[in-house]
Length: 425
Image (tube, rainbow, N blue to C red; front, side):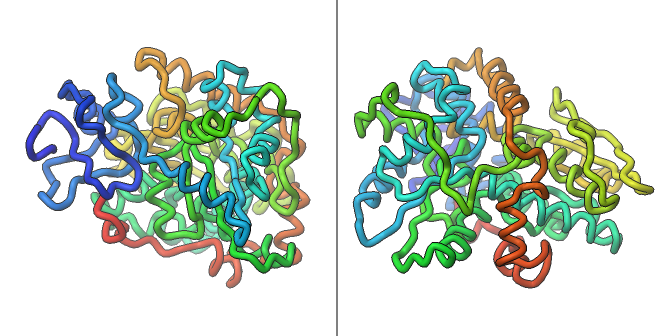
């Protein structure tokens, strides 16, 4: 709690995700209520020199007076774009394109197509779709699950793409470290491949700066350990557009750059709760049966914070659980041995409800999250599954080899540690 005011959360100056404007704060206590009751943070564990924060930004989304804000990095990005000694890339997360239009009163379905042109108008040298990185996450994480099921080791396997959840585990449940997938998040994988695979195949001799636009304030914390240089939120991208005085109406439909192309339906689904689970199970099905699954065969309708379902793949019953929110996580931990794989997200509905998304009236949050989730679910894709994506196939054939081999592990996996030592917030 705030040392001088116990009704609000403490926000340290070096928090990489969140800032407070003191003059705006009315001491309503809403941030503390959201942090304790919705996010599930136990502030009684705080030390004077260590305010506990998992960087999720839900306090920002629920502050009624705008006293809590995202920590902005977009001006740094605008400055570095003009550095001719560097190549600056922008990768766009799936949940961004179903929310960015809200900032301009436009349909998100129409906005998605102009994102590549928008990025180039801002001055980025290359523009990529993070759903490609998500496809690779599926390839690695599904292969990792099959290996654990075969060896009957470290089960259940928890997904690892939500940094708020991973940080929460490092603070409150370090004993779960061995259960969390070692696969990097789509953003972590994307930036690594940009600085290795893409750089090599394009024969780029300049320093590459990898910028990602994400719906999540917690990603600003996650990148302290990875190859991403800057995270800007959906809100910040809108600010960049306005400050650069770009006429959105004049932009034409564009295409993402090749080598790291638009991902499959599997990658797109990562932006909503349940999407990671469905995508992983689709590839597990292919690995275990050598057959292509039917679309929607492994869908879990996530209409509450805890949803479970068992699926039979070949001769194996895989027990699955999808969770969003840390209070929901705490409820299932005593019985976690009843499951083989558990998807965990911090934010309601998954990444579509991230703390970096456009601010909306508090009473409309649930309605808006539902709309974003439905847009991602219904979005068309040229390829249904990651293992059918020709660019993914080529990446493994020409560069990585196979999922979970030595090179893939060295580049695309990491060992979980107590991340609190990197930044106390």
